[in-house]
Amino acid sequence: MSDNIKVSVRLRKPLERESAERVIAQVVSENLIKVEQRAKREETRNFEFDLCCTYSESLEEDQAQLYEQLARDYLLHALDGYNTCIFAYGQTGSGKSHTMTGSAELPGIVPRMCQELFEVREMYESSDDQASTQFKIRCSYLEIYNETVRDLLGANKCRIRERADKTTFVEGLQEFEVNSVDEILDYLRQGSERKTVGATLVNEQSSRSHTIFTINVEQKENSPLGHVLERRSSIRLIDLAGSERANASGATGERLKEGSNINKSLSTLGRVIAMLAKKKQPRLIPYRDAALTWVLKESLGGNSKTCMIACVSPCDFEETMSTLRYATLARSVKTFAQLNTQETVDGKVQMLAMRQQLDELQGALSRVGDQRLVREQMEKIKLTNQFLEARIERERRAAVDYYSQYAQASSERDNLVQVLSSIVSSLQSFDGGKIRESLVALKQRSEEIGKQLEADHLEIRGAIEACPSIDLQ
Ligand SMILES: Nc1ncnc2c1ncn2[C@@H]1O[C@H](COP(=O)(O)OP(=O)(O)OP(=O)(O)O)[C@@H](O)[C@H]1O
Ligand SMILES: [Mg+2]
Image (cartoon, rainbow, N blue to C red):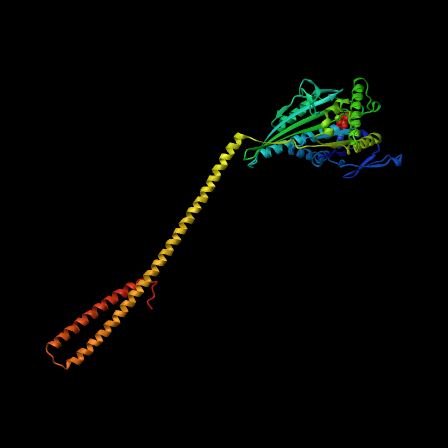
């Protein structure tokens, strides 16, 4: 996907030496800056940008705000896996080095980004998230001085080379792995001390070279299933030397030579930007015409999310107008940032992870098995209950049958006793010797059977009453 270069403007606070001069530029809103030359009213112009930053009473707040509003996004893009680039452009003394590097008291974008990058790393690496992320952070620092690339962290002059895929790289540039914010800031300090600066009439600490501080970030995200997602990104933070007019900077001798090389490379940058900004781009973009554009090839027209900060001074009408026109052109330049990510599967890690998952699944399955066992037991218990209920019912029915048989026997006994009693009374008047004796014996026998039946009856009734579920009625 293509992205336009994001262009923002930073209006510097008037310096003491400018106190007598007229302020000609003013930030009107977040996106608008107005430039006005009072002597010639027709020269008043409004310029629109992605972000316009002005100054306040607090230099510290201005630095912090610029980082938060503008630069932080480029760290976040880099953490996603995009290459990013922020470069400060503008006339000499307009505040590029102050914006990018700043000082120990008023740190600029580079140290703030280093600080935040390590805070993020700490946060990711100490998180209890299952997917762990490991960072590898490396940095390098170079300057392009009089069209020569110099390693600010090593002893070598370096060469710019082109790879087979037409991207460029700096051969021989040393990269250092850094494991703490102090370490990376130490490299930044060491390199900045070696950077070529010199005093001119406009700026006591004028950058005589373009510097590029690069932070390469590699993130390895290990998922619990052994997938490894690698993100690689390169953050380029560039402090350009400022365009200058020899009569204004008072440059002579070596300073003049430096100045003319600076102007030459900046005008090549201008031409490259003008060509890239065209709707129908020419086939050949003159990247090779200057070391600066050759190194920045990818950041200007390739795989990068790029931001330009146009620094302007508040009192110089000509230079401010020229910077803003240049910056307006840069807004039409498109880059083609791609995510530099790669997903791999580490066999060994995956084996371990799968074994662990298998254990977990087996554990879960055994718990499911337990539940099945419980269900089976429940079924058995239910069946046993049904069986017992049926048995109780059967026994109840048997008891009722037994009771009704007993009742029938009782009533038959009563009938028999009644019949015998009536036979005995009708025979009492008849004195028939032996017959009477037989009848008395029969009556006794009948009474004994009656007593026996009565005893059986009591015993059966007691047994049935001991069973609560049986209703004898
Ligand atoms: N936003 C700002 N607020 C206050 N002071 C600033 C601001 N920007 C720059 N300055 C001061 O202005 C002076 C010039 O700034 P700086 O060195 O950053 O300019 P430069 O653009 O890098 O110039 P050169 O191209 O010559 O290197 C310094 O003294 C710096 O402290
Ligand atoms: Mg500078």
